[in-house]
Length: 291
Image 1 (tube, helix red, strand yellow):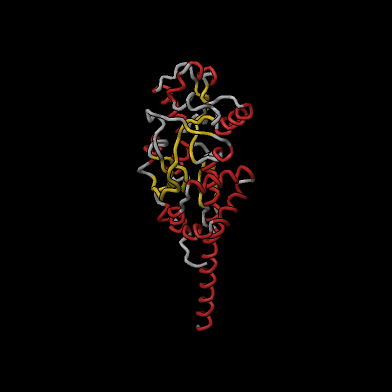
Image 2 (spheres, rainbow, N blue to C red):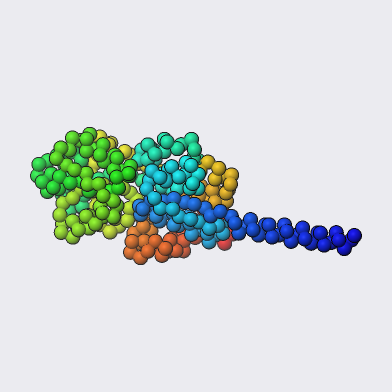
């Protein structure tokens, strides 16, 4: 009988141990969605590396457009997204899911949308969006405003600005971030005039000499904050990662420098460099007091 009890105890111990191992091995990866914008790509890949290397959890990165990101988090198909531009840029998307998601925190403040021109265009020629109505300016710009993705909040607000400022004879060129940047690069090489939709933070301000033009009507919104959104039960289901994401906050200047570094090298190298250069910041995000 005693021998039988020992055998049963060992078997139970092995079963519990095996079951725990299986649970650990089968833990579902954290799914983080992102759209192909340089700021979103950097912060998302930075978070993913730290979650994997420091918290020991696998991460699946899912790239898609902005609208499906909000829908995915709202449905629970995605655990989180790190690029909710609020209160204005993504207001329509957020309104549809606000009761189905939770806000973990703000990853950076001071974000803004606007239209930019190269600094070689004199300010007395173009200082504000109103100046685009001048006949000579319209001619030099060829009636074009270089835009980005059709689903972007910046595109929606830029379309609104074209109407509010009555920019007759202008066309907002719907393209992509990559398409807009190609046009900007080509124009700057020739010192051609252009106006482009843009936002901060962005690495383009590290590469080119650009300036925002004034928006006296406020059609493009004011300063924004960029939030981390998660599916409703994420804090309960994965408190460690949720806590990490809630503490992750980058100064916008550091972010722009890192984004420029990513363009010069790669996002993986820029992420490694950021982690190496900001040990105290990383330790705070991970809530670690030790070295």
